[in-house]
Length: 151
Image (cartoon, rainbow, N blue to C red; front, side, top):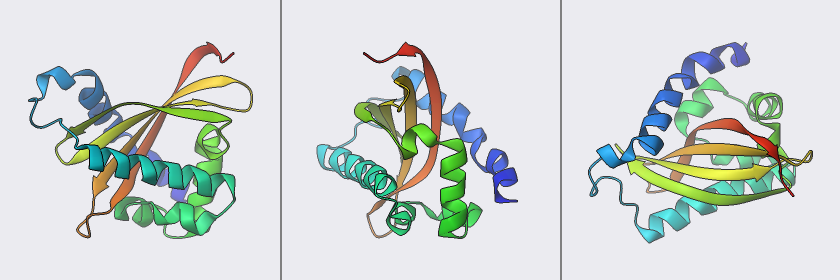
């Protein structure tokens, strides 16, 4: 049942992500500046979650999820089932590297380029929001396949 709610919760953010990354010149320069410390913190969250996925440490992977994600997937098991069925390249990446990022309306959009076990390349956009306790949590993830394969 949680998988059925997935499109309702997350699909609207595809438009916001596209606007933030690809129309970012429209956003004022002051708004989309991400401090180096915030950039490092955001990347540590993403690396922590990917590392947890690789180790099958589901509780740790779930700990990086923001309240909206925890609401949609109220148990670790539901969350991991969603990740396995929707985000296998992210669940078991062979390699990844960080790409562009931008800050818009309190959200960070961080690009990753991921290679899956079949050498397929993926563009993955993580969306994170800083919480009241100043930690960054993942609010959304979208994936787009690239044509071709990695070397």
